[in-house]
Structure formats: C-alpha cells, structure tokens
Image (tube, one colour):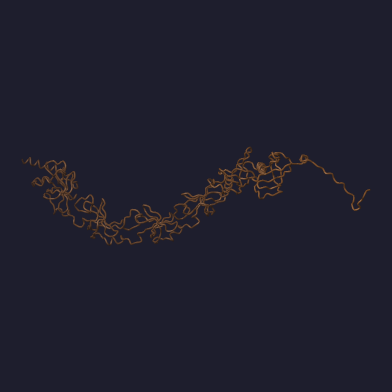
Length: 578
C-alpha cells in the first residue's frame, strides 16, 4: 500500500554524480603543463625555508625561500608566477622556480623594449669585484668604470639605490647584460654644457662646486661644465695656494669672466664680486700718508708691504735709511713684520705704490750742508777701507770719504792701507758736500800746505840729501826725504857699475845719500843719483844739461836714457881734457 505524505510536494529526481579522472581534467584545461613554461600558482603552505605552490597539476611544487624577495610578506592564498622546470621529480612532485620565471619574463620584456643603447631603471643589488650587480628585472653587471664620470673607490655606497642605466651590451646566449650609468651622466652633462655655453654671458654670477685644486687655481663644477678659477682671480690680496681660500666640495658663487665656446672653456673669478681696492687708491692713500702694514715678501731690491688685502706697496732698498748703505732688505726687515711707512708715490694703472721708511725720520743730509761746509775741520775713526779711499765716520749715519789722492801731497799711494788702517782716529778737512748723491768728501793732506808750492825753497839741483829707501821697483828705488817728499833713484844712477837687479844693491829701510839731479814740478817728482853724490860741480852741470832736455811731464823712468846720455857727455869731456 502506497503511503503518501501530504506535506511534501513532488520531488525532483537527484542529478547523477559524474566522476572524471585528473587526466580528463587536464584535457579540458587551457593550461600548458610543459617544462619551460611559466604558469600561475597559488601558495597553499608557507614553511620556514620554502613555500608549497599548487599550479592545478596533479601534484604540488616547492619553491625555495631564497627565490622570494620577502618571505615575511608571503602568505597562503597568494598567487605567484612559477616556471615549470620538471613535471615530476623522484618524489612525484613538480619542480618549480619563481626566480627563473621572473628572469624569463623580464628577459623577454627587456629584449622587447630595450635594445643595446636603451635606458632602463634598476636597483643596485650588490658590490662585486670590478663593479656592481644591478636588478633590472634580471641581474645585470655595471662595471666600476661605468658607475660615474670618476671611478668611485667605495662601491658599497651604491648598494640599495635606484638609478637609470644605459644598456651597452646584451648577450642572449649567455643571458647577461652590461650597463653604464656614466654614459647617461656624460650625456646629461653634455646637454647641460651646451645649454650653459649658449646661455652664459660674461658678468653672470653662477653657483658652482669646487671640484679640484691645483697650484695655479681651482676647477669649479657649474653643473654641466667645468670652469677655471685662476689663483690670481680668487682674491685682490696675495694668495700662496688656492687651498688658503677654497676646499674641494665647497659651494661658491663665481663670476663668469670669459667664454670660449669653440674650446668649451670658461674663465671664472671670485674677487670680481668685490670692489677693486685700487679704484680709489689715490683718495685713500695720498702721497705723504703714513700707513701701517705687514711685510709679505722680501726681494734683493726691496720689501713688499701689504697695506690691505689686495693692496701692496714696495719699499725700495734705498728708501730704508738715509745714511746706512743696506745691502739687502732682509738685513733690517723680517717677513710678517708689522711696520710703518710713508706713501711716496702711486701708479693706479700699474697698481704700484712706492713706500719709504726713512721718511719717518728727519733727513740728516738736510743739515749736512750747513754743518759740514767746505773747510770745516773734522775728526773721526776710519770705518772702512776700499781700493779708492777710506771712509771716516763723522757722526751716526754720516761718513766722509777720503780719496786715495787726498791722503798725501807728495807720496804716490796705491792703496789707503799703506798709511791708514781700520779704527785709526784721524783728522781731516771737509772738501765738498754732495747732498744729491749723499757724499761728503774730506781730505787729510789739506791739513798742511803743499810742499811743492815752495819746492824751490826746500830742494835745489845739486843738493846732497839723505833718506831711507821706501820702495823698490824694477826700474829703481824710491827714497823718503824730508817734508814727506819722495825722490826716485833710477837703476842707472845707483852705481858706476852696471846694476842688473835693484834688490841686489838696495833694500827697503836702507839709509842712502844721494844728489838731487832733477826737479820736475809738473810730475811732482825729484830725481836722485847715488853715484853722483861725489860728482864734481862740472860733472853735475853736464848731467843737468841733459836732464833739462826732457820733455815736460815725461816719466822719470825715461830718465835712464838721459842719465846714460849724461854719462857719455861727462866721459867725452874727460877725454878732451885729458
């Protein structure tokens, strides 16, 4: 008997359950499960050092943790691209690689969008020998020489940073890429350089960075082109080396002085931002102004004194003292010494100022003409001897010069040391004061009268005289007589016998008796004859006649001929008389 349930309506017959195998499911799937293909998978388990991924295949695959950039961020359910390396390993699992999937995707992308010479962004992954490893989707190599314009020494400083790179080489067989950052920097700088060269004009003030220092200046990076700041354009003042005012890496404002667009050279200036201290120099330091300054350089001819930065004056060595003869400035001045001086002259065009120190004191030569008029009797010590005379100190800073010809009226003195020595106190007469040349001429012989003015009263031809031999010469001997007069005995007048060498018969200091046979007023000399000391009156007259025939001013050395002639004349008279 059928039972019915009024509460239930007509029932839909249940649908039959259809069972299919995995192979049948793969047949209906659009996925290609082939080694080398990239497929999407779902993370079904995160383990400490790996993740389990389901790609919809009959078995799951494992991805090592070192292939995932951030394991901490990975979670179950995340989708991930993987490359099928093998459909089944010995354990029956699919062998997958996320890293190779990314590499293959990026490699294909790079090849499609970036030929050699293209530009791509990437992140520096690590520093290795010779350069950097850069992640641009795949790993690429950046040689150290291509990192920057100047090869950096510290490569680690770039790790973790993102940059744009130029692809310079792609090797598809080895699947490696070589990059260059330097080429992009140089290209950018070249573009900026051309723009700067077009826009810049002399007089512009530009910001720059000190790139390098040399002995002659500094190179300034103007963000696109390097300009030269010469050391002479750094300061109006004196600079020994650019490092005194600048340092590498320093940011400065500079003035564009000159542009050579063909050679792409720019000359820069720093001091031109300030007023030239020489512009109104005459108003600031008129002639006669007393100034203070520092000795900055000593040279043989003078000393340079810095009055203010950029303004130096020269003290010539002759302007150091009125009276002292200073050989070189370093004898009285030192470098960095603070001194006072007086402005003597200004040449603004040549930027020169003449200074003097001696002008700070009164010029003793202003009173010298009044104090030492010619004829004044003076006394002082011999300070110095020279070949032409002796210097006697008249007062502090003032010397008188005794010329060798003003030492004696009568004696021929070749060097003052023959009669004077340093330290001797002597008396003299002022002869002349030359203020312009700062000279005072004095003489010793002027203390007495010239004996030659009254020579006729002192000596006559035929006089018998006695004196000491003072000097020997090849032609004769000088004999010192009274009244400081020297007489000359010629070698032929020593003896009746022929004398070969004067030193064989006479010596200095020997006392001799001789006869005056010649008085030459023009040459201020007296001729003597030792052999004639015993001559008769007639013999002397005969000899005198020959001697008188000598021309005025003829040197006594020539008397030998006269003496010989006199001898012959005397002998002739004797023979006639006989």
